[in-house]
Length: 140
Length: 386
Image 1 (cartoon, each protein chain N blue to C red):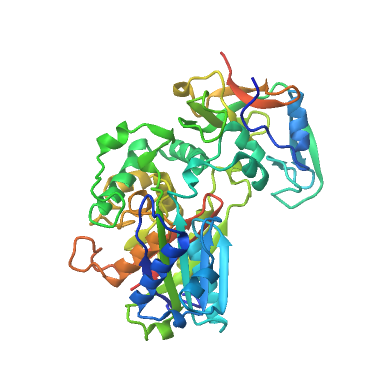
Image 2: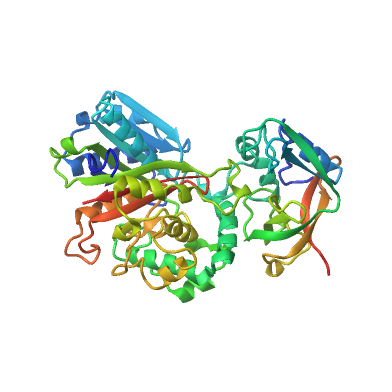
């Protein structure tokens, strides 16, 4: 069945992030002037206005800790009607704590999510050529 | 004290009927609200030379309103915006009057927020991905409503400060209690108990329907002029002691940093400009699109200490007779919803002592705060006095 949910829109500023995601890898924008990371990526650095930006590859093994979340019981967008309750969570990257990435937490019951929970990034193949980063609980 | 302290005043407030289905256009409702505010001030439409409104492409224009009041306006301004826009436009009105370009300004918000375009149901996904910078990092995950965007801040803040779901309930109960004294409140006659609150299922955790503002068809209007011109008005002027019309979050993708909200940047300048301290405030209108937003702002404005704001509400401080009666007409959680302007109308009426000798009057109140919250991204506030 065709994927019904919104597909991340690639733009001039975020294309590299989503291109790498399609290859199941995480890449983050970094400012070479002030050293801060930028997520989501943009045309320049929100910390210093610097234009000297680069991309840092974090690879396929991305560990993180749940920083905050909401649990949604109503679909606010098309395609989510079969995913309720839906966990939307920000997780703090183990290697880059200043960056928090928002995804759904998949393979997790709504009652089981908590702040401080260990997760890792996984990629859902949503169409033939697109993949969506998601969080999945780390099984200990 | 700031340069403009007590030199400008709100001299007229008014509203249209509020309902789930107005059966009419925003222009008709705006005319009702404007005529009511003019009547309240004892002014004629011809006394107004500036007309302003905020909208989300869901309203009529200021030019429309003015001409149907029979006025050729000198100045019109229509901005796109929701919460905190009232404060911003009051700041603009003061600046234009101060510069000698205008004399008296009418500001309105008119929306079929229930029968027309509804904020709470989310927006068009394609529009959001391209309109919001960074939209492609939230929309594909099903996050398309303010309850989800602000909820992400709430869950983290509750975790850090010990605010519980029951604390959120106390905000709702306090405001619903006010609404029971206000026959024009939408939820008049529908009191809320903690038991009922706690058993109401969440729409999007941490918020249930009671934590969320009502969505209605309604228009509000206010009239702002100089203290000098206010003398000629029929109404008792409410003076603007200080105003910080706008402050912003440091990141356009405000959800990238959940520890900060724009309101955190408003208070310092606001209190300085008004020449008062948080403890001088006796009545409050705190923007309340969601219950938690009230608690977060009480902290931001120094009205209760971080870590204690939940208990502050639980102890009854937001109720009549408490230390800071707040949103005394019921607020947006239970009275009406015009992106904050109904809370402005109420605090003006409180400071005029318009409810004197009824159980709705905050006794002897002289100084009040009115805050606006567009979101964690944009905020503004003002301090008013009798």
